[in-house]
Image 1 (tube, rainbow, N blue to C red):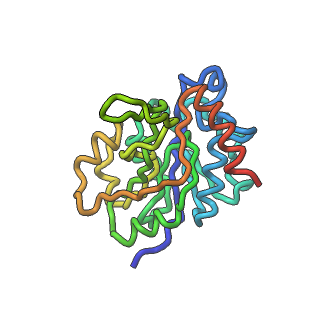
Image 2: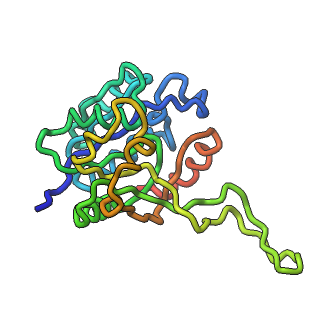
Image 3: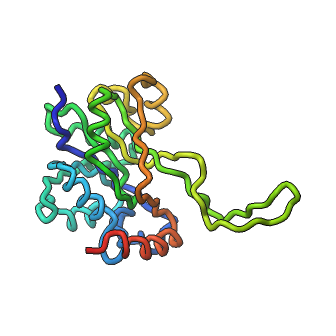
Length: 235
C-alpha cells in the first residue's frame, strides 16, 4: 500500500551564467523575483502539498543558499544539504541527494530549483503512486517565443497571435521518482539521457499541467516573470 510522499529533492547548484550580473554573488535559485528568491516560491508549494523534508543539492555559492534557508524552520520544513564538491550533473546530483533521505523512503518529489510554477503537486504525487510508476514527469505546454502570423491559402493575412501555446509538451523539470530508479541513476551525468531510456514504458508516465510555468534563464525571462508573479502569487 502506498504511503504519502513526505520528502523532496531540489536541484539548486546552477550558476545561471545567462542571468549575470544577478548570479555573480548567488546561485540561480536565489535570484529574486518580486523581492523573494525563486526557491522560496517552490518551498511554499511543496510545504502546502504535505512535504516535510527537503534535501537541497547545492554547489555554486552554496553558502548563500544555506544562510537563507538554514534548517528550513521559517518554511515549516526540515532542510538538509547535499553538497557537490565537483559538478555531478543533474542525475548524479539526484543520486547523491537520495542518500540524505529517510532510509524508509519509497517515492520522492524531485525538481529543478530555478523555475517558477504553480502546480497540483498533490495530484502529481497521487497519480505517480496510483500507477505504481518508476518515474513521473511533469510536462507543460510549449509556448512560442514569437508572435505568429495567420494567413489563408491565398496568402492573405488573417491576423496575428502573440506568443501562442503550441501543440507540443515540454519537460517541466518536476518529477516523482520511485526508489527503484536509484541504482539506474549515474554517479555523474544526466538522468534524462542516461536513465530515462532504460525505464519501462509502462511505468514511465507524464503528468500534464496547464498551470503557470516559467523557466528563468535570461534577464529577459526575469523581467517578464516579475510582472507575472506579481499577479499570480499576490496575497
